[in-house]
Each structure stands twice: as C-alpha cells, then as structure tokens.
Image (tube, rainbow, N blue to C red; front, side, top):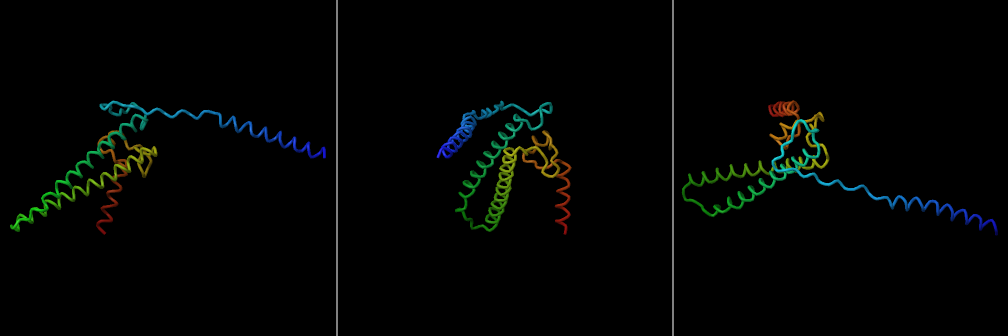
Length: 173
C-alpha cells in the first residue's frame, strides 16, 4: 500500500507542475490592437513614403469607399427616376423608338457601373488581404500614379497591355 500513495504523490506533483505554466500563458496580456491611422481628406500618397504603407492603404480604402457610395447613389437615382416615365406611352412611333434607345443606353451605363462596383469590392478585399497595389500577374508594385488615376487597377501597365493583346487575339478567333 505505501507504493500506491507514493505514486499518487508523484502524479499530483506532475499535475501541479503542468497546471502552473498554463496559468502563466493564460495570464499573459494579449498584444494591443493597432490604433487606426487617420489621414486628412487632402492627403495624397507620396513616392517618398514606403510603398503601400498604412497611410496609403487608408487613403485608397477611403477613396474606393467614397467612389462606391457615389456609384450606388447614382444607380439608385437612375433606376428610380428612370422608371417614372415608363407610364408615358407615346402614340408616335419615333418618340417610342427614341425613348427605347434612351432607356437602353441608360441601362448599359447602369450595368457598367454595377461591374465597376464589383471591381471596387474586389479592390477593397485586396486591401484587407495586403495585396492591393501589387500586380496580380507579376507581384510587382503597380505604382502610386496609376493607382491614383485608376484605383481598381489590378495589373502593371505592361501586364495590362499583355492582357489586352490576349483578349484581342481571342476575340478575333
């Protein structure tokens, strides 16, 4: 019987040793969350700053978000006000054709804007993934000037030209 008590003591000692580090690990404070960087509305990314630093990412996130809001608002207004004159049916065939053409052009513009909103969402996802500003083909920096001109750019100019040539070749087939 004395042997079993010794074994129990050893087991309890090892349990106490094991449980102490667990409490120490749990007691460690977690790393403090990064405070979000705030930039002024007049801020423009500079080449002297590190490429795609947090300031750049915040700038492009704000710019893309504002652009998306404007497009959604414009689309909603166009759809709302465009549907108002559906009730006006003209007896004149020329007026009906003109109205149909106008609606067709307007719907094409809305469809282009919807595709652009989708591209903006993809760009915002790339910002979250820290891949924004880098070419999807070559992983090279796209460049600040190009991103300021076209915030949804996915490729460097050379890679974009290559894609456009490939599209043209396949379109001719």
